Image (cartoon, rainbow, N blue to C red; front, side, top):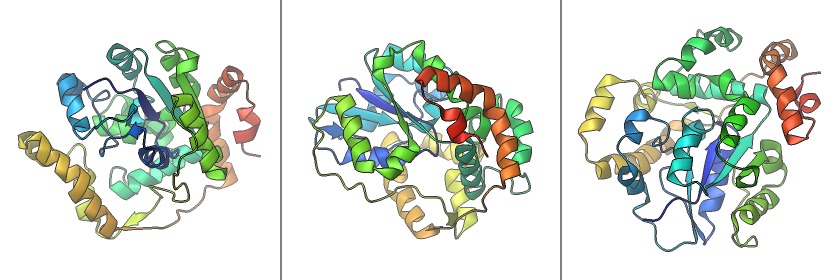
Length: 297
């Protein structure tokens, strides 16, 4: 199989699932069934080599472009270099959202999935960032809510390996306000036909809660030794089937939509203070006043 042409690299909870689904509807684009492929993120998976990675693309036919997506690629230090060595001409799509809203959404997502202890208040988890960045795979990818939101820092890392013209940045608000135009702009960036029929009315991967927590937590656990031992014993195609069919079926039955309690303005100010300097630098880099747009009043 030829190389993957572009990657939606994150950030988490910015609308990447919706964009992934929209591009999957494009006749000239092939997107794999498994969205969150950890090949470039997880050292153990990466060591298995490109042939292992390309197994996720077995159903590719003859589309003009091949895409990939995993939200944790954005903030994982080694990923830009790894993708560069895989395909130095790859195009990179980054999605951004107000870092306070993004962090709080990621926190609630972690609570829902059983990765975060409900007794840990959102604000208090700021103090846990340093140890989590150096912790287990799950801590690094799903519990580093604030570190992930240091957009300038992470984009600067991508720019060490890819030129600006290969990186396309989308803002979550733009996708919400006019998904059709945003998708057309992405298609233009990728070099495929813009005016195709894509249903952008559906919002994918909404926030919610689960009916049966024990089942959901087991399925989503990344550090469960029993689950990981079983997974390592299964053939690739069986694991692929479990992720693409069985887990999605269980999620459909087990999920329910709920709204979580909003942050107070005082809480928003505390959290924004963590991002303050990074947002200033990002505003300068993109020549866009994100600081005053995102700063709590």
